[in-house]
Length: 391
Image (cartoon, rainbow, N blue to C red; front, top):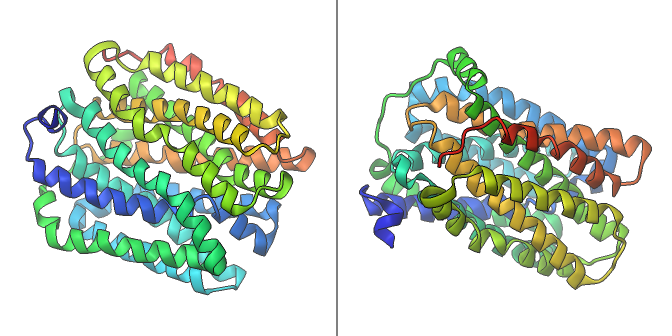
């Protein structure tokens, strides 16, 4: 089984990357579900959207220039540098109370996290052949998602222990093992390859290629969903429906379980049998229905919300697995520009989701954000008709 997962590339290097991904995933996930509530305590719910809009807009610009930096300095050096920026931003959020500094460190945190995952994409892609991409990418994301499953319980414990500051400081502490492993094993995972960095050409190539263009839009829509789910579900359940953070920690841990069990089988099926488009469609149908339920339900039953959020993540896990499998079958590890452009789908998705939220909150209560998001995500289906399946 492991030979199937790792194909003919050196196993040890993939093991190192998987362990690094776990600690990086944990450090990124622990603050994720509390950051909107944390920001709201300083600036109010309407201004929270503008923090995310600014952070993601700047992230997009930074990501677009990142290939030139990687080409000049190498993936190894940039990974270490960006990791240090990430730690600094987490510590800053944990110790400061001034809104302007919170804004600065929040933006740095978002940018650094986006960039580190691009570095990791390049490392992992260098150990993936097209015939094994679905399996390797889904094992990789399953390990990251294991960290996400653990993180809500850890976040709730840290909030009860030391309020929001402890969450950020705890996340900073957890990135240290990532850095230690990287320093010791970095030369082993860095292939010192020559990267293609024709930015304008990559934009033209992605736009003119209907498969890559469709993959980008489908990936972006998943992040529009995550924007609503990560930013506003915790606020809605905590402030509007009265759930405590201890209850939310349990709910969110149950919610994330599908990411642990869905993605590896989905990647295997995509590699061996039906390709990606059918599972893309099923995933989007599930999350659209769940978003509509979010919008209309006022239930205060903990198990109801655990169940509906669980189902929504079955859909999201299917989409995430197909996103990785489909895109990375269409590029090589040297296509750093294309990988960078593709990873702008995350800040683009959060940016668009935040803009939707700004408009909705001017006229309507918070739960209508979920309905508006569901309507926008329906645009996935025309794109599914344009991309060529890999099977």
